[in-house]
Amino acid sequence: MSQSVWLSGTVDPREHGRRYSFTESFFPQFRALQLAVPRRGMQQMETNENCQFITYGSHNKNCYMVFACTSCQDVYYSSRLFFGKDAADCFMSIEGELLYECVDCQKCYRCAFCKDSVGCRESYFLDRCHGCVRCIACKNLRGKEYHMWNRPVSPEQYEQFVRTITSTNIMRTREEFARWKLSLPVPDANRLNAEASTGDYLYNVKACEDCYDVHGVQHSRHCQLCGLGAADFMDCNMCGPGDLLYECIGTGPAHRNAFSIFGVHTTDVLYSENCTRCRDCFGCIDLKDAQYCILNKQYTEEEYESLLQKIFGQMTDAGEWGEFFPVHLSPFAYNETIAQELFPLSREVAEERGWKWREVPAEEPSVTSLIPGASLPETADGIPNDIVNSVIVCAATGRPFRIIRQEIDLYRKMGLPLPRLHPDERHRRRVALRNPRKLWARDCRKCGKSIQTSYSPDRPEIVYCESCYLKEVY
Ligand SMILES: [Zn+2]
Image (cartoon, rainbow, N blue to C red; front, side, top):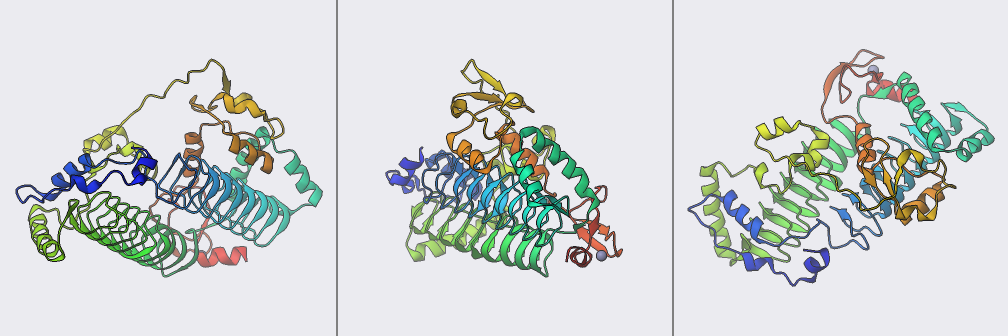
């Protein structure tokens, strides 16, 4: 059903509530409930405004084709942004404004093609720079202004670069920069204010073990993409804020939840999906403001507690208790989820493991005029307004895509040309810029100390331990 029908409250998921049966184990009963409760066409929180085509986001406004973004405004084709404004084609960035093709950036303003940079402004092609202003193609710089290729330039030279941004120049600089930056060291892990923690992409964390992409997390293990005030999480993905979460996905704010998916303001919720403002619920789907429910059926407090004990016993005997939902309960195929992005598998391997795989043939656009991506205008000035009526063919994959009006406004504001690749291909290339969620043992290239790093030993980067890297850049 549509988001508006779902929000209208006219569908009551309790209508599908059912008595727990002890002649069958829990997971098949939960599966039957999954198939009975009507769902939203797209997973969205209640708090988005004018964001028809987004998934897994909250508190967003005027966003288009974004995934897992929070508190963003006028953001397009981006993934996992927090507090972003006026941005397109960004990934994993926090508190940015006027950003284009930025990955893992924090508090940047008017930047494009930057990575792992913090507090930078009006800059292009930065890598691991902090507090830099009007810099181009620089790496590992701290607090510099008017630099290119890590050397000082005049304001005129900077202006000259900005004035001559074209699709061709972007492509050329991108390639040149990727080669040049290999001559400068990288730290063993991406971290900022990370105390006693292991993993990668660790920001403002303390006592986190084997965690990746966590911001503002304490005392947690084996978590990914969690944050915004999280403590005592284990085996969680995209959760927070909250505390005491175990084996949860997309849950938060929440307190003491386990084996649950997309709980919002939930406390003591177990093995449930999409519940909002619920407490003391087990095996429930889509409930709002509920307490003491099992399989969407209402009980008294006493009935709930006693039934739950019996269910725990039965689940323990069946080997279900303490395990997350089996993969076949997912409505998605492996290759349709971010699992394929992070841990890519071939179709054969996924199917061998009994996981779904789905190939959907690309829809042919019903228009006669197709514009090849490579023949789009070179500059922002050349973008015609009526391009929104055209279908563009991706220069790399041949997939058709279109441009929206809001995007054009952003490109013009930033002086950037139109993208020539399909949004999925752009996203795929941004994902490829990041390290895998895996650590290898290596030695620091400078001091020889043993390090654990997400740079595999066969990669060409010069990897330093944290202390050698910090000595190098400060
Ligand atoms: Zn070292």
